[in-house]
Amino acid sequence: RAWTVRRLHAGGRLTPPTPRHASIMKGATMRARPCATPAVGTRSPSIRPGAPALRSQRSGATGVHVCRASAAAGEVKWVGNRRKLDLNRNYYPKQEDTDTQKKVWYVIDAEGKTLGRLATLASNYLRGKHLPTFTPSMDTGGYVVVVNADKVAVTGRKENDKMYYYHRVHRPGTMKTETLSELRQRVPERIVERAVKGMLPKGRLGNTLFTHLKVYAGSEHPHEAQTPVDITSLIDRKPKDADLAAVRAAVGLE
Figure 1 (cartoon, rainbow, N blue to C red):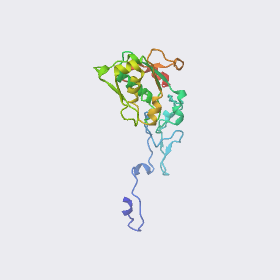
Figure 2: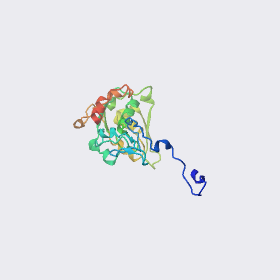
Figure 3: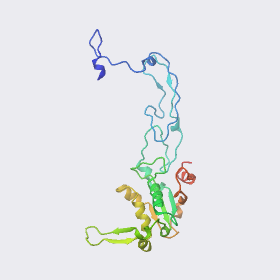
Figure 4: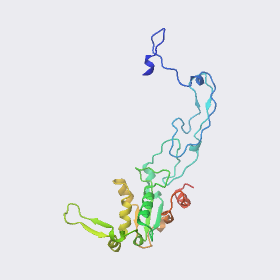
């Protein structure tokens, strides 16, 4: 250490270096410093909710640090179990925050919508990227219902040029190929399912998220009891230009 080479001229004892801001510690009164409310996702390691005001450890100092965790007193609601969110500490969801009974349901009408843009919106809401509590390794999103999957649109010549491949594992010579138009006639739901699954993380988390996607070829779906929020208008809009009032109200942010 740097202070090991510093010795007293009389004795031979080791002495640590002079602490920084020593003039403040020698009986000087510290002025109160205002502090702003930290943003979501930031941390302040020196401030704990409910902790007393900070005082100097030296006997001569009489100042008080008045920066308080005022943001922690307010309740921040979210799609999990709506518990209080401490903005002064790092946030990481718990297992109870992924409760499927408390997730929000969304519905998308695929009629005339571009396949890629629709799949992007669906995958983002499945993962929970629209929430301030998004964590890549946790299931913080909701359920997404896609209707009119047989009327989804594609650009260019993908209707006849885009190919889908399928083969059985360890069975040589069993690969089958079909175009998008052929798959639309056979199983139209699979077009949206394969597009969304390719945008989800691979592994156990992605497999779980994929089960939260409900795709139907027609305009009817059996999830009316969950009162899904219609987010079809958000497909062609940027987040800064989209009206997210209904989404924020559904997840409890307003």
